[in-house]
Image (cartoon, rainbow over all chains, first blue to last red; front, side):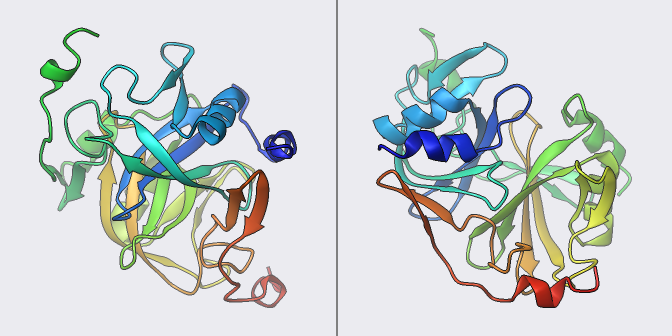
Length: 131
Length: 131
């Protein structure tokens, strides 16, 4: 990708050097999660084919699924009109959310209450027990 | 919504008091845009039924479509496992993007190049000429 540097130069990373990325299921369109990438993580995501992020709490780059095996295989990558947000369409292995739900958006606000939608596809303790 | 304050209290707004919101077409699942809400904008979005944001450049709250008429009618609102991102499913009137494309993610990275996907549904100059 000879022009990748130029593309990355056009991105508006925030004051911490990060850009939000929306992860969407390539097959059924479900929005699975939102996480942050630094420049290197965007590069890795595009060149390795596995969604890679920057953890704001751990201050390090991480490949989604490196502990759980729940990787995200990159199918298509888009960025928005302002070049300050990415949309990554992926093949999600098992689940995107560490809590056991397939996606992170399982809290729905309905009539002023929070209800849980979706069902767990794994038990958190089982997957991350050696983490 | 008597419990709305409690729900909003659980949200993790960033150091600027903002939370990102992903806007998704309720009908076809297209991710249309990403924008930021402050606490008041989340409240307005939930109570008025029209997606409302906080502009980081203009430092003010704005109702999507107040100039263009391209409003976003709220159908469902979700938040993620960390309570630091919202997913708002909407009925999009005309288009979400100010450039004339239906959604903001019309830039696709393919083989190290940026290609434009989708087609314009309006001409920017016509809609915003009196703005």
